[in-house]
Length: 110
Image (tube, rainbow, N blue to C red):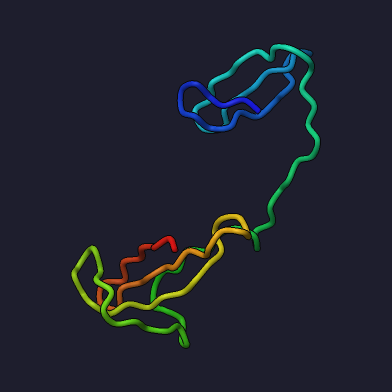
């Protein structure tokens, strides 16, 4: 593994003109590989269903409300909430809130 010296993102191995290089997917920084050759063990492509869905518009029916949580945008004290697994399975879920008044969405890590 190699990390980008500019932005810290994990660099991806690529083959260009017969030479193996590392490319940063975020900022585009490139670095020629050093040492033994790079081998890609497997590549994972996520389906549309596995990507995070952002809730916009009115909250779906059945979404629970909570009182006492303060909206950082308008100061209202009532919001809808839901839990979603956004990190590894062995880490806790992320709690999302959507303000009942202004519709602002924010998250809280447990």
